[in-house]
Image (cartoon, rainbow, N blue to C red; front, side, top):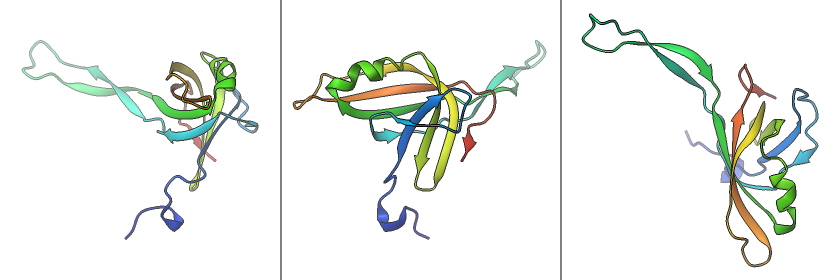
Length: 139
């Protein structure tokens, strides 16, 4: 069975929008042009249960964490201040993909940048830390 989007264009139409944290119904603002995106990854923190009598360490799953997502953006150099203003502020985020949407709260924890290309275009990588205490919701 073939895997991929209709017409063979994987990811076409994927967008990233943000809105007021805790209000997952309004995502009026798109953040730049999305070049690539990774969804948040669920992980369980290990809790060590090893006893002094044990010869091998043992663990049980601990608290869950919904991790981070990395997004590569492209935008006009004139939008730099607007993108940087999002840093460190919690927002509701919505990833819209051809096969559905994902909604979660989070904040931009890092902004990586490049010197603007000719023509005033900036390519930048951001990392968004998921802050929900529950799984990101599908919409």
